[in-house]
Length: 238
View (cartoon, rainbow, N blue to C red):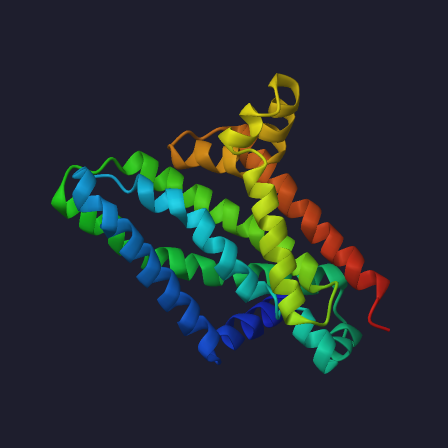
């Protein structure tokens, strides 16, 4: 665990040693606040449901920007060989990068707490859906990150990693959207509802804490981290 912590700390510091972290945080906070307050005073309700409604779409572009460089840049520059020749197991390197990116997202989510705090000062805010929404946002983002890290491990090109991550995250999210599952019939609709990210996210965002949703996100994250480890083990860059 000490080796994981060392890489975790190094990766987290690397975000803030470059403009990327500040650009990401600024875009996330400015756009989320702007989109939210556009409708807030029109609806005239003490609710931040709209905030959690557009968050997955905003993260579709921001998360790939975080993960695209994680492995792709190391493979391009050759530093990945140095990283994986030290006494460090592949799974430890993967977990360190994943946890550092999750920690960075947690910082962004904590900063966005200014929104519900502001709304609660203006009206009687129900904090149940707020807590569920943030929990759903955390699990959804962790799922995007796990997928993005796996894609980044397959290529040396950051642009390719960004585009492929954005496309696949979109597909996994949209397949359980109501419009999609209603057009597939009951049997296929049920299957796609269970395998897609949006139905599980929406459940948590409504404040419904269902163990099945937590198991789904845990399995999704574990699966793509496992693929990431296997991708590194194959040493495709050699």
